Amino acid sequence: MKKFLPLLLFLLLCSFNRLDYNQITLGTPAKEVVQRYGEPYSVKELGKGILEYRYIERVSMNRELVYENHYYLRVQDGQVVSKRFREENRQPFDQMYRPDPNYPHYP
Image 1 (cartoon, rainbow, N blue to C red):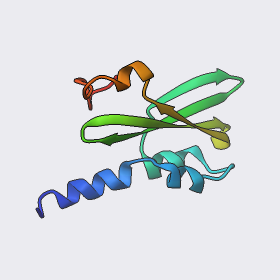
Image 2: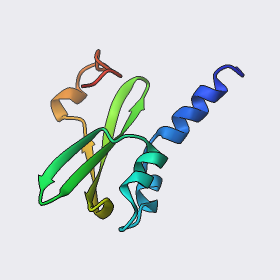
Image 3: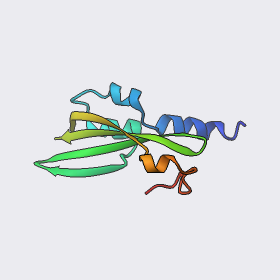
């Protein structure tokens, strides 16, 4: 049990969730966000020097993906200038099947 404690602690500290999202204020340096929460899932260039960082929180139950929370942070001149949140539920056709065989290895 003691062997898994550091791993569990690492996973809890490096995950990104709604509480973390709410703590990020506009004007927070992007380096601080990456240092605290890790590298984003993706970084998209929107033009005019604006980058969009995307973090994903996957919520599952019994090895089955229930929903995903997507957190978007827009960064300009090294600072967070806006943020938004989107929750994605499973597709209706996907809900009638057994657990996803690809879980937890999504692209």
